[in-house]
Image 1 (cartoon, rainbow, N blue to C red):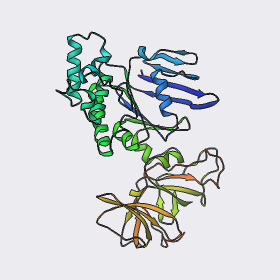
Image 2: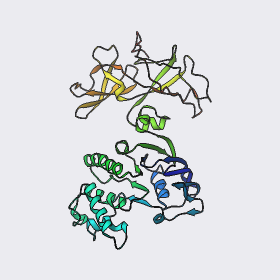
Image 3: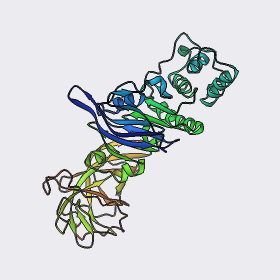
Image 4: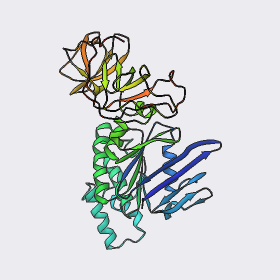
Length: 382
């Protein structure tokens, strides 16, 4: 049985649906993330799961028991849910040990004190229990907030933008540490964030939200390599859509070359078949385009972003199309310089061009492994 289930959950403010028919389930011990831009409804959804807000439709279940439905809501304190807030919400007048023990009752016994000490050791704060929140760094305060949420052994942990107040380096390190702590405790957790690096570091499963709906619920690998629609493709990672044409033998021809697949190009059933000449937009990630001095395809350097080991180049092809390429940083080229590039893609995702089909559902996906690329004789031609 799933630890958490959401079936058609709707939440409205007035006539505006902030959460619009959300469905997902989470098994015990899994860590999930609701990821999306500001205003997409992810924090509202988290508050509905916590029991802080009523829902207008659908239902929320914990261990098979309905805790929220239209007109009925189990109060937050009866849901056995631990909450880690964005601002930590520690009590400044209580010691660290007392903060962690807060959820264990007014008069915790010896077992409770042992639990607190064990948790402080688990989060790397052994021996810090006598200090007060203002004596700790932001990262340490976040660990205290997590330990407090874990103390009563809740059935579910909810984390609301837990690392947003921290600097980038600490955020990345702490997200990996928090995942390890949650896994060690066997906790089931749902996190909300707009930062995909945090989501990838923390979560087993990620739900991409947009305009109150889950666009895709999947593992991080599939979100990056097999996005379900254009929004997910644009939101996750970096990439560009390059025009291509469906050709013979399961191929897609582009200015950069031809990609040939093991299986036919498949269209959505609502659209005509993707026959020869069908126009598509092919998603290319920076790692799909490799710097190759011997390549006949030349591209002009428009912009470069130094990233230490790599440089992210924005390149302009002969047609004016711009693409991205991640290149080892010892290949340091000047703006305006032309460099050779070639395709090196293991997967390819393509979408039907909008002018070819007005139906938003008309999207194609080439999600299968691709054979080695067959280069066109005139590969720089459009």
